Amino acid sequence: MSSSITNNDLVKIISLQRYKNRVLSLVPHFIVVIIALLFLTVIGKAVSNFQSSYITAVLNKSYYSAVQVIFPSRSRFDHTTTNDKPPTFHIHVDARGNIYEGEWLDDKKHGKGKMDFANGYKYTGDWVNDMATGEGIFIWNNGDQYEGQVKNGQRHGKGSYYFANGDKYTGDWVEDKKVGYGMTSLAVGKYEGQFKNDKMNGRGSYYFTNGDTYIGDWINDKQEGQGIVSWANGDRYEGGFKAGKLHGHGTYYFSNGNKFTGDWVDGQRMTDYGAFTWVNNT
Image 1 (cartoon, rainbow, N blue to C red):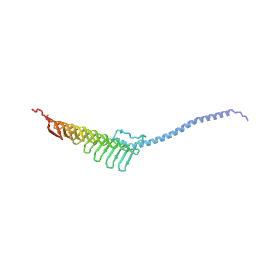
Image 2 (cartoon, one colour):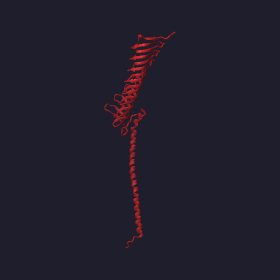
Image 3 (cartoon, rainbow, N blue to C red):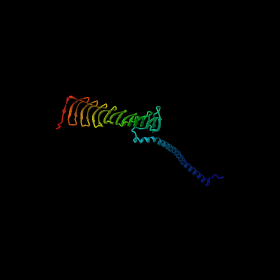
């Protein structure tokens, strides 16, 4: 038997070697295909989860969209926490029977929502960490209503209070009290000016429905200090006031042109001292 290698043997060896090389060259491609399949599987699950989360988010925001009809602008207050977790819609009834419907975050009222208190009192608007803060509407059982800025459950900032009897106040609030500048519309007239502790305090103007006007100083809802009162009949007084009455030194101008300059005490003119000036009527 000859030990020499024939041409046929060489051909077979070369063919086998080429086959092995081709198989080895295809291995990376198979690896790429397997990785791609795994990647697509992960992406598919992520998309499915996203769709489910998106639908849930849309449903949760339905109440928020409804409240936006009342408050079209977003509150100045941030409704997210440091982890940026979005609030969800929640209905909560506390031990007192108060019912809350709205956005909920970290087991607290946070975002847009409304509260129906067991005593009939209602609030609709912004909440931050369980407190009414931002902008909202309060409605009381007697028909009074407030619309404006709130902080920690109190009227605070700019807002309008509508009384059930038709009176109205629009202006500044600090911790549930009228403080700062504001305007009141009452059955007897209209006041524009400064307030303190829910009362007219400082400089202000009062326009009475009968045509009288007062412009000057106020203390605790009374004209006190220096001011000018003009009556509908044409008379005018300029001078001191106390407890809503002419008091101190002043000048009274009569509608016919006469005037008196002197002192008043509790609305009464002191006749023992003063100066009358008459116009020539001839």
